View 1 (cartoon, each protein chain N blue to C red):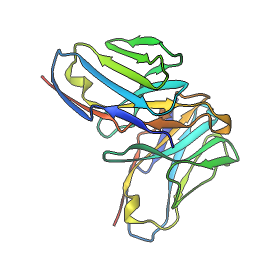
View 2 (spheres, rainbow over the protein chains, first blue to last red):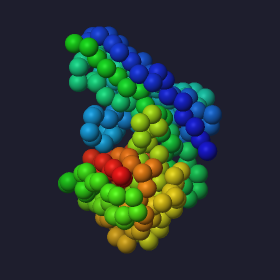
View 3 (spheres, helix red, strand yellow):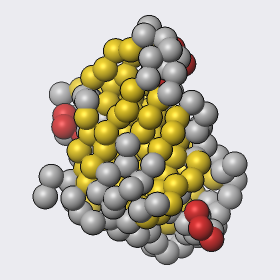
View 4 (cartoon, rainbow over the protein chains, first blue to last red):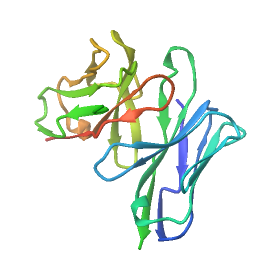
Length: 114
Length: 111
């Protein structure tokens, strides 16, 4: 099956620093998504990317859909304590009847020290 | 809209017991799915449905059953619980395409 490699597994940063994380795949995807999960909650969608090369921002968050369609990046600028959580990438390959299935990375645990 | 709701929030079972995790959405979404989340494993797809009366297996379906009799509800059944099914279970829904909305989760412990 499809595999997503998400890195880094965890990050410890100081408030105000910028953060970068990425996902790579052995297969191409038509859609990339980034979710954030707060402790004890379900994942919440941050950014969705639909075209190769697309660069999309949501406040301090910026994500890019790689040109090869096999990778995606998420950047967080000027981190704040509430950015703490687990960030997941997810990819979707439109394929016949299973075109709604998402493959998730294993997550990046972000800790922000005030 | 309540979005995606899940009950119960917490559950403890003994090995061999059966139970049903409930999931409902009020957004008229066609697609619904169940995931389990284990430490270091991310989210893994158990079963999914593209509409009422249609279900299919995901990545880790063994030990779980689903049905989709209405658009709103998508229950997940554990027929004979095993300790390996201790996990956090998330239900998600979407109208079409990839933007799935997740419920708050059910934390299940099997002793």
